[in-house]
Image (cartoon, rainbow, N blue to C red; front, side, top):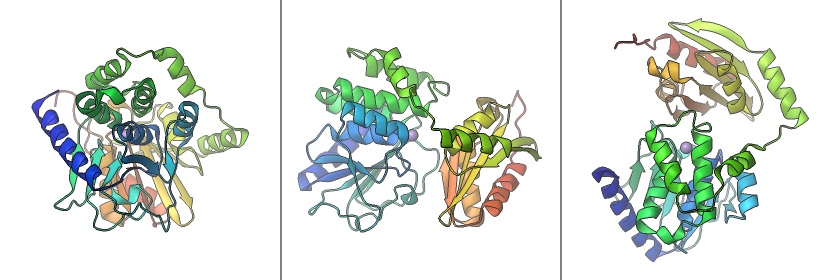
Length: 334
Ligand SMILES: [Mn+2]
């Protein structure tokens, strides 16, 4: 661990200890309920009795893992949310903006943001803090904290939810870097986890006939266009947009874009292969720029990002495509 990380963890530990002394501290997940946000919350919450992992939604993988491991996680309502009385603080994991948690936050409560997104729309108050590291998964930050300040909480269940977050956020280590492998090694070390069978369990997700139908319809509607220096393959779908975008990348798309419109909300989901990010594409920055252009919230990572807002679907797609048009392609030796 470098000096910056170890200072950050120390400051976080002080913040956390003070918050837990004041009262209960919810550890809130992002509303997409992906494995990284849920795994981070559950693992961190295991370190202190006053912490409680909670969120509005469990995604598919997270739901299966939480059920299988019987890990403590509390579902909370997205409206009229009842927060504990005498709340000591609030920790939000793996969410780049207030709109990504799906609940109204309690007023006047010190907040800590733990995240690894390249973009951040949080506005922090004096008693708030943020732990934002350039790592592949938020669970890597949590594991480093536990290793240093609460090693006894790193049970096999805790290690499994951490590892599951790392596996899914790196796309089964396809988007991993050296730090991600170091974290994986750390999580497995001195555990009884059989990595291959745990991976098999995570991947044993079956697609229902109706989901298969919408993936296929999404693929059949896909169009390939050029925008500036880049090729974009785009389509729309009512479900599994991330998975569909991954399939579009599989067609050789330099940028894959999937949009969806539901209940007055449009959502854009984009994916790019490493070859595109190496040549200068940063989807998180592009989605932030879309939000600046047409409103809503956008951001994420270089190769995976999203935007959501009230603009209609076609206008939102057009805004993204127009933003790509002005993205420069770096030459190989630059
Ligand atoms: Mn994440």
